[in-house]
Length: 114
Length: 116
Image (cartoon, rainbow over all chains, first blue to last red; front, top):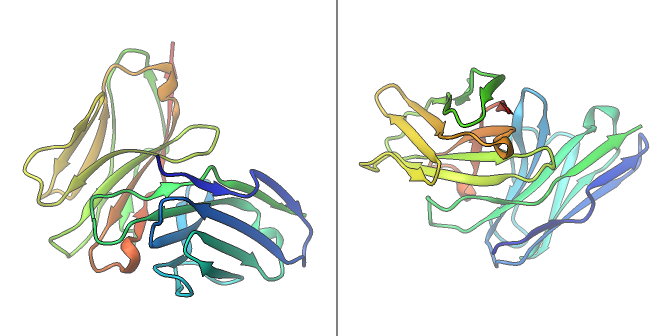
């Protein structure tokens, strides 16, 4: 079974802090993704990566950055956290080239910025 | 423009009855894939079912089936014989082949509550 592990289920930080959310997958997947989920808006893509050290902006990248130094690990960074970044964050991974293969998700991190 | 639309924000269903969750999509590409995920209150996203645009048959997986109407651009999820454990958020998502990294676009979700 594919395992995608997010470092924290719940996280509380203060405005202005630098926040790191970590994600690790164990299936050698090429693609990794970071989403945020807000009520009524579904999942919105922040950033994704299709290879080590490669990254692409998603639909809502402002205020975020990412890092992928190793294939299995994809980090989301909030450079200076703000209250409007309070949300549920979901990491996912998938293989490349098989269009019928789903993305596999971690359990999510509920982040509160005070 | 919204690519994936789920018009039902929430719905109740009686245990053991069937429920249909609506999903319409918008794409100009003839080749695409549609996915449904379930998200229980615990938060994890569980993949349920996939339908490819060229698939001849509607997809089925156990109690889940897809009512795929290509001309109408709809891919409704049908859950038969609802169980209490089916209470969750359900998301429809689309993958377009031109999208880099096999990324998905998600709808806003439908919350289902199964009543005993």
